[in-house]
Image (cartoon, rainbow, N blue to C red):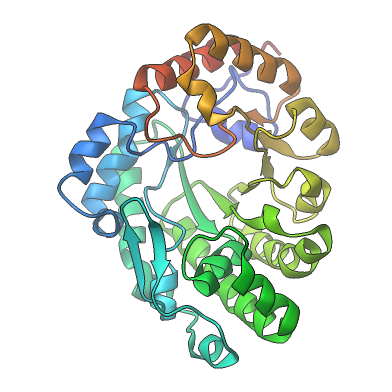
Length: 348
């Protein structure tokens, strides 16, 4: 039996070491599906919650205690570093992030700063230190950032988008300007993640949430080089790097070339295929979040299937294929964690 415990099974799985049972955490695990989160959120707006270390600490810890997950993830938002770069950000209920001075021209890109992460986002580092203190080694803490293409898509579109017309038009008609933007975002993200690691996070996840909208050629041209630079820029800091993107099944081999320790997989492909295509990398995933709305009998069937496909080789972290949805019944999220721990007991 592997000598791992709840305190280290997530980090061991990131390094493809044997574990006592499959670790699980859930993207957006600190969120609106939890009544305890809604109570805190009812007293303040989303951005203030992100920027108030005591409140960010409180909601980060909630799922660790309530669900029994094997890692905490810092409560924040991928958009946070964009403000000190010079962008005006609001996150509106039911609308999502909005950039009120979108980046559309070379002058707009030139005006953007590469901010000092302490001066610009010191509240994030304060929250990390506080969370680590409160966790007292119970489980590891994951930090995170958005990938350059995803951040650029928000910055150029001004918010979420269906067709990504503005960012793609910039890439195709003014590639030098687009690359200058991605370059500044890359430098910002490297500094931001390094500061998180220095403050105490024990793993980092890079979210390329919109990378799946790119063709293979455009992904290789406008996203992959910057992902590689970020992984290389934080890799020497001694913490595992997780790379997750939505609808990136076609790009798995390319993602592996970044040097990331773990590749997150969404539900659009089977996990055994992902593992076969990523022989030297740990994998994370990949339950469809909507399965949590169904009966527990179906949940068990789906979890068993993923665990079977993951196989007994070390290096699987159970997660959803995307963030948990706000209407998810809490008891089903708890049942998921229990099922994974029960079914994932590995014998060495």
